[in-house]
Length: 97
Image (cartoon, rainbow, N blue to C red; front, top):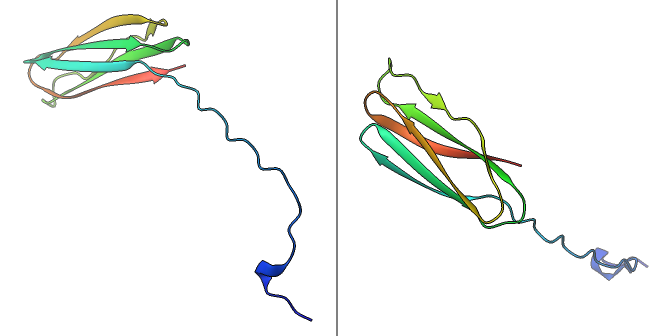
């Protein structure tokens, strides 16, 4: 006698509980004014977040910059700044545990 696949018994295995996601990462807000950029990063979580500001300049001859990583301790707000000689094309903040 042949049974359809769904009709065959399955081994009784307890379902694993899903892992609780680890919350991490400071919330950062950037403001560009002309050729200057300021980022404020607030870390609401219990682990330190190393944040770094990256600035990409619009002109080919203007040097892009990667800021020095700064430790955003728990419940702490840090200020990051950067600039170009002329216009800014894009800015972003990287996070590191």
